[in-house]
Image (cartoon, rainbow, N blue to C red; front, side, top):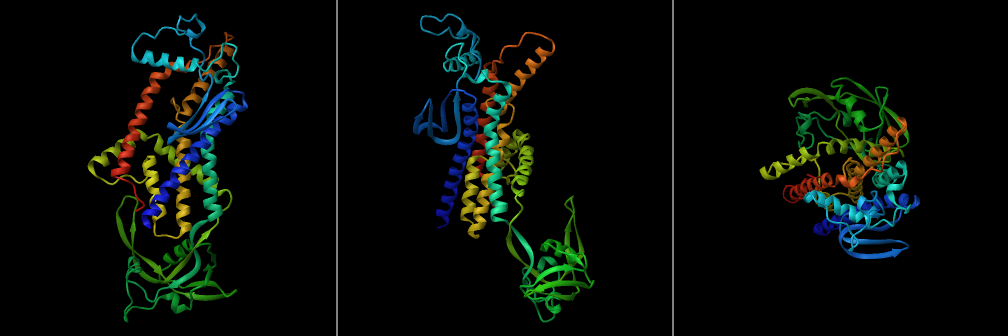
Length: 441
């Protein structure tokens, strides 16, 4: 049964990833078509085509490997100089001289030229105004961000956050010697009775205030209690719809405090012996967007250190050291965590919440990662468009002729290096997720 639940969790993550990719490419497709760009393909995945159907001028399909997707827009780059010159008998100009990278540039230009229909073709991407090009390329990552907002909203506002409330679930019978002993110690005849039970607090009571301070959750109540050892406190509780006032004096128990530098010390804390009721508390509607924005900051902190973090992951893989739980994951790692969430010994709602949080975090990662200003990522195309816009503004300010469109095919060598680096880092993360994984534990 546990294995079946694990498999279901992995399958759900694969489906969730496919939906995320589909929405990402839809974010490119919709504005491209809205602005009149000719789109030849809308594909989810890579490799062999499993299913496809043509509607109008666009072929829609699903491929075998769900690790990405793409849309093919006509004229991503301006036509190459060879397209404007007389073609040879074979209909193509000669191959580029200059070695491997020059050949790559020429291949990219040839592939781009095949999507053009002459100099009078207006339904091409490179002819769009700068702001429209940015909208098309920003649409994909933005869809991932909005999907994450929806998932976080379902998690926080629809399901709620598990919160220790001020309603008493259980009482301790006695006072332990230390706070760390409360969960495991058994009472003896010589142990003093717990203050809460002695004062008359009962399971089901709801603490309204302590010493005149309203308490909204157990954390607030606990903070007051722990900071008041030996001091009599006035508890206002609600029981069966009526309020009562009780006097409770927290007992003194030893507790260990860990400082920011890792050093520990022993001090006294108050203890009354109550355990809270844990409930799902629904958060305000803005909690979802707020969580998404906070997650963007956290992921961005990982992304800009990605090469170093992947290197550390590789070192941990070789040495067998535990991985940083806040480090990067591959889709294999995300699928594995999803399986562990599904197979966890926890209520179904907890597992659903864990899956939603994992999928939302994955979409935030896709949003941030795709904004890196390097081709072939969306951020690279946005950077090219912004550079062309800067050149146009500069020419206009100094009354110079409008510049030619930026030929991004010249960046193919850099793109090649980026792709190889991404493949290498992805391979390291996949191996780490297989042989030195991050687990729920």
